[in-house]
Image (cartoon, rainbow, N blue to C red; front, side):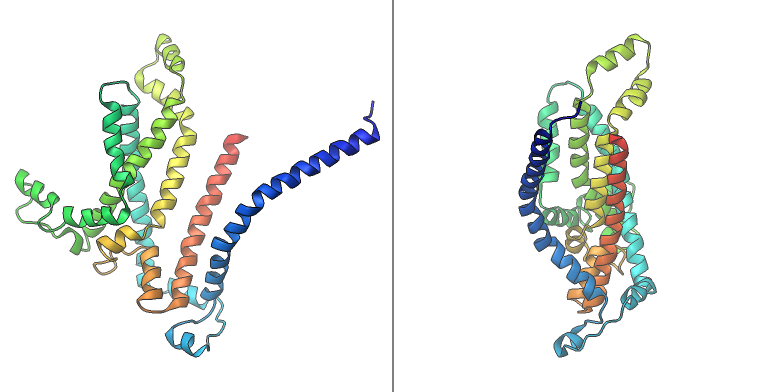
Length: 305
């Protein structure tokens, strides 16, 4: 039996009204995003398609060059080194901060004395400004810093190592300091995920004779999958676009060995005043993060299905 025409019209009008109300609530945030992010992004993209440097900027004689800036970047050995550094820094940081953060999350998920205070102390590293962390890293990995002092005392080295001025060790220093910040973040998110897993599942598995490894593999990991995905994706985004840590700690040196896309774009734009090349580098950074973001959204959609 069909609903009366008037009732159907009322349902359609109510649905339309609900949609309009939802759009009105979303509209302020959408306009803010367009103004703060959309306009600079479009302007940066248009700038990357022109030949804007100091000379053409002052004279106002810049011309459209299409993808010439991107071709120049990918034929530049320094840019390829910077791109490699970015991925090495990102994946190196993710491996260590996720592994150690996960181990600490499993530890603090246990109920023991001082678990709360110790976990709170570990979070201090995450709450510190990155510039302060970078300054601390310069002291720790300096010639007379903590690392050299400890290694000399245990006899692993015979003379101080110049960690931050050696092309083969500078990346180790920045990765270590980034992990120092990232480990508490990973621990916090994963600990929150662990608290949502019911203890009854572990009790039932123990009664059925499951070992600790089997409980971890078949209960903890599957139920913690959403939190793990979130930590890895957020960690990748935050680390891939890193700037302040390298800028303060090593300034991208020595010999571009710690330069990443963020610092390289800054140098091109505000040190060498090659604005279009800097904008093109920024677009490469944006496209890499866009691909990762779309991949993450697809994974989330698959999880929901």
